[in-house]
Amino acid sequence: MADSEQQIKKYRGNCHCGAFVFEFEAPEIKSGVICNCSICYKKGYFAITPGVELKIVKDGGTIKQYQFGEKKWKHQFCSKCGTATYGTSEFFDPPMNMGINARCIQNLDIWALQERHVDSTAHPPPYTPPTHPGPLPSPQSIPDNQGTLYHGSCHCGAVTAALKVDHPFESQSYKGMLAECNCSHCIRGGYVWAYPTKDQLVISGRENLTWYEFNQKIVRKGSCKHCGVLVLAEPVPIQEVEEVSEEMRKFREGFKDIRPVNLRVVNQDELDVEGLRRGGRVRQARRAGEGGEYVNP
Image (cartoon, rainbow, N blue to C red; front, side, top):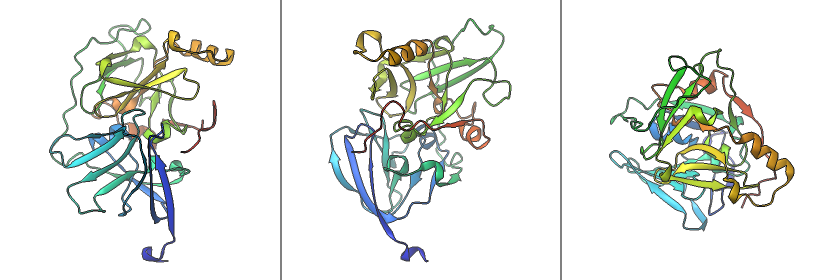
């Protein structure tokens, strides 16, 4: 069957918190693009360009726009939950100028789709990673002259990070877990998680983080309020935790010394996260439905 004869399907998507909901009609989605330009990489986009108009079903006023460089692209993300939804470009005429983050589409198994990887790093202007101005981590478990130090940031540089681990993530000597998860929030951002202890990670610019809690509200996730890149997760401050089950309280207690970090914030010249994924170093953790079923708006 020719592309023009493909059956048209109706798709519905949303940011995680449900403040922004959209619909569109297009041929069945079977593949998407993973681009390694600085913004696509850090946000974990799985892009499709169906060449159709979006119908905005709900707009709660949380969508924020981020531009950089020559400002030829307008990147839209939810300022509440951090979900990257779509972007529009000046390089093409509507509707071919719009790329949708397929991760937002309801009931679409992203891990089952074909990935087309595009190398865009050579396209000018080059992205210069922001410099981390804060102190460096000095974990007690790793001697000063040992370990591997990584630097990173959100895209705009308002939040920076330094991370020190015992062995490089790429090496077989690193025994910690590296995972991407298909829970309702993580799958939307394509986050790749490492789980260092809190003294292995230093964050500068925390005042620029927006914190998002959902479900049991035991853990919160921090993304840059300016560009929307998710940086880390941490336990919700104990004084903010409402009455929860004993099981959830124990979970939080075991989590208190761990600071999950999204490895997409690490500078690309120091760590190839997509290479880790394709090389099998990143575990696919199927957690959809754990801790309560997510209901699509």
